[in-house]
Image 1 (cartoon, helix red, strand yellow):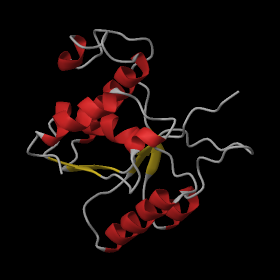
Image 2: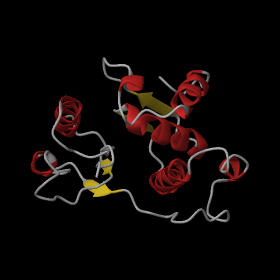
Image 3: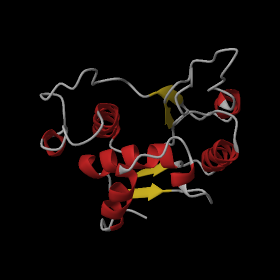
Image 4: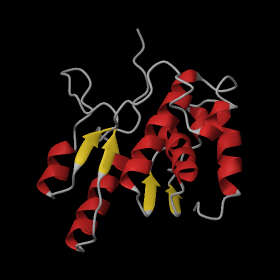
Length: 168
C-alpha cells in the first residue's frame, strides 16, 4: 500500500538539510532557545524519518516528537476556535492543529517557523491560535498542488494566513 506522505520529520531532503543548517547557525549565535518539533522520529529500515537527527543532536539542537494531546476528536481538548469548524475539516488536520496548539501554549515561542507545505497549514494555524507573535511559513519552489500530500483546504488556509500581520 501507499505510505502516507512524510510531514514534519528530519528525513532526507533539501528542505530538511536547510533546517539543519539554519538551526546549527542559530545555536552558534547562542540564541536563548531553538528546537525542532517533528512527527515520526522513529526510524525504520524502509523509511528513515530521522536522517538528519544525528546532525541536529551533534549541533546541540533539541529535537523531539510532537506530543499527541488529541486522539479521537475530544471537543473539550480542542482550542475554542477549532470547535466550531472541526466537522468541516479532516479529523487528522484538526488533531494535528490541536496538538501543535498545546505545544505552543506550553512552550510560548516568540517565533514558529514551519518549512514545508504539508506542515505549514497545521503549524501556522496552531501558532496563530496560540498567540505566537511571529510566524514564518516557508514554501519551497514547487506548487503543492502537484503532489500527493496536497489537500484542497491548503488554498483557504494560505489565504487566511496571508491576512494575519504576524505571518510572513
